[in-house]
Amino acid sequence: MTDILAHVELTWIEKRIEHWIRFGHATHEQILDRRRRILSFPPDSVFAFLRWAANDYGTVVSCIDIVRVTAPGEPYQTVPFVRPGGESLLRQSGWPKVRLVLEAVDRIEAIGIEPVDVAPEHWRHLHNRMLAGQASRPYTRDRHHAWLRRRAVS
Image (cartoon, rainbow, N blue to C red; front, side, top):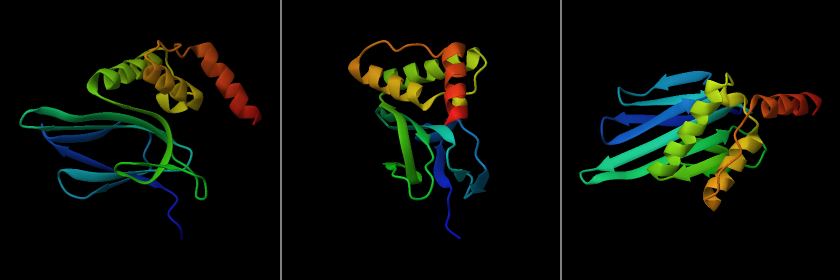
């Protein structure tokens, strides 16, 4: 049987390498050792994956990816530590940009919406506006209800 899940390798070495999931619903977890585990996500699910690494001189990597898991046969982008990959909805690096994305996620949760249910277009919009150095439109309940209606008819 073909594996249809996306597998995300998480590593946690205190103050050196920290990979974690900010949101998303994994269907399977495999613990490799006390510092590493693999979470698996089904097709069409969305998750946010953060990567941070440091050396003796400070932070060397700070990234966030919001990924939609693709079905077998769909095109996908490769994402570090995600096998095989997925549809990249948002990718930002550098702590100031990562912090802005995390604040946007917090605002969405504050209005009572699960980030996994947010319209993919919003994550793309946020990504593109951040790249252009522009303010993004906030995700509102009205936008969310419009997305749910569009998804229901398609």
